[in-house]
Length: 213
Figure (cartoon, rainbow, N blue to C red):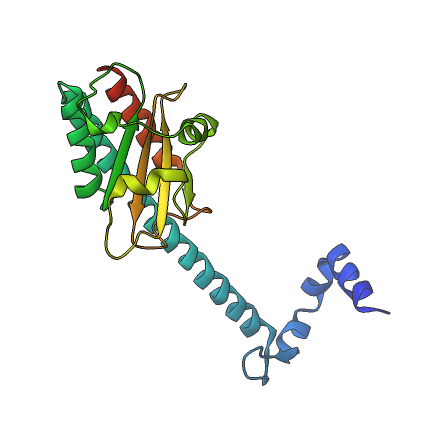
């Protein structure tokens, strides 16, 4: 008789243990922690406590994620209301920069827009390379990396220490611009990070900006 035969028999005949309750009280099995022999009931309690600990840790993680998402949602709500209240393109851009720095602690922000004939006096309409326009057009989701794309590094001046992580968000369904975020922290933006809130931020900024183009 193999181990599998014993397991299968007990599974197929659960009444066996009811008829032989004294067996359970006499069975001793090794404790997984110190190797001493303990009753099977004690081993079951130990397993239940371990499972309970794992479940508590997972629940704590879920609560922490939920609280973090609530905080981000509240900040997204504030920036949305502020952009809706902006009465000009200059106000929209100032509001976007301010809220990203104050609410989201993004240290470096740049916007480039390329509809011709719109507000040429603003630095956001400075000429960009054809490669960056093609890059923005290719984005279906925000793009995060540890290196700047094409000549976009020039948009941030010459910060010290040097920038080590970047995020790019296309503005508009048929992109008319690009929102670029950067940080000296290499872990602030990275390729594997979730981009849902960056995507929503891009959509909100696109709607606010497009009203004044």
